[in-house]
Length: 164
Image (cartoon, rainbow, N blue to C red; front, side, top):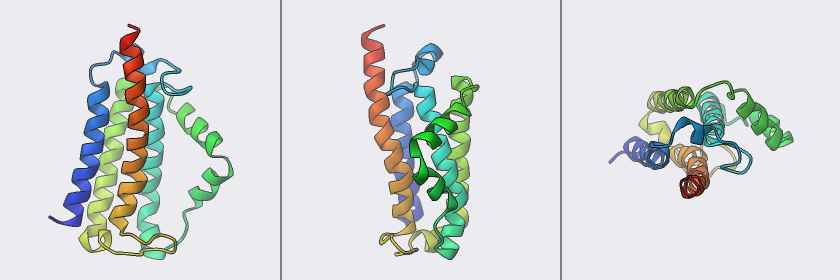
């Protein structure tokens, strides 16, 4: 298998596990605040969309130049504030609209990865501070982030279904 095929399969597996956990929940469960910390499940999806969008946007330049993305400074200055602002900017979306955005964002990432190509995804040490491949970075940064939140969402789903 190729690096790209393996990466896409891993990202798909993470995504399927998350979507499977929430697929049968009614919208009011997806919008209920306090299910995942202070957030709703819809808020978690919005948070994941924002980070995945950021990675999709900065990755080509980072691969080409090795430059640290400007968004890192913004997030580093106030990560909680950045997260809160980004989640709030998606509050108007219905759960179904957020799920559609979740899918569109993934498709944009996959298109970007296809455009980078197999050789780039397989490149080791693509920038200072990252010793793995570009694909490993994407898997860690996007897949690992999603996995971390999936566990919290699944715990929230268990609580919701126990108390309904």
